[in-house]
Length: 470
Image (cartoon, rainbow, N blue to C red):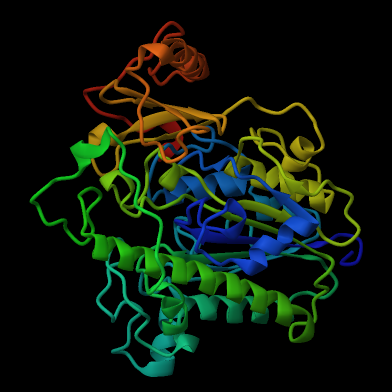
């Protein structure tokens, strides 16, 4: 069995912007291991998360179902009752399924189809990394002992030896799980890194790679003054507010350092899984993605849950196993996290379950008919006014704020940093109507009151969870 079907590694990062990889053309960031995958697989620059926060995005990853269909439209620590998760389907097909790292699925130790999980889930009793580092260094040592918040914009180098960083620990556990797998079966491994999600705290080596570099100017749109909060020092976990240039620089340095560290650790995993863990490296499929991005001060915004490129656009790269007959290169189709599960099932040769809204991206690369655009949404998170729906085909983006009823329209081809909102531009009026109608049609059949088939209906009185969210 293990020779008939490839091993599969789903390699994910948390809060990783789609433009912060070398393949995206970023002028500074270094991701050499990931960049090389394009020689043996697929890169989709127009990849977006349907829910730009963690818990909903991970439901999408594990079900192949988009926003609303996965039972969540925002951030909620509730149990999920999906029977046909990605590991459950692969386990039924004979795979040995295990995961390591940040899950943010609830309850935190529920297996959701995996045979074994080793979590780094940020709560005592549910975090095997925290238990390990206390055993190694004593009860007074903590991952955030450097004083940098896990949801803030502060940054500094890691305060302990590099070998104690959770990014290194995640690789070490992944190698151990591979070494101790059932050798008669192919394996499915979910490697889930918490970084580059804050704290932005790479080891000194990776901090030094960027601290003296000149970084691109932070984009601030002509519509973004409302988020500046001039004269008000932002809280360390602020979701909006203008930072100083030096604060922004340090935050991006820490963020990029974490990304490059993860890339090097991915290279170490590949290097050692054959020699130290006894796995067939060439007969292994990889898929790299993130749950959502990070605004990093773009448009005076921080963190995630927004429809803007920094928050909603994600990396999406596939690497084939040996002998797999598939196209390679860069493809412009709009793809989402709902496409991860069907893609991996196709590579594994496993029949997909009913109910998935996603499709294998290999079909898109082969020229099969594909969706025209991707839809995403988020319920209120930091502020009710931020709740939104969005549509994008990678060339244009339409955003509708579902509490306030406001709209935005961006031409991503001429304005990839979303500096100019065209919703009030008479020359873009026809495009605005077209995109609005698409969202009207998209939401009309859901039954949650956002569309009656004729118009979009905001909910100024607030948002109520969808029926299956709890």
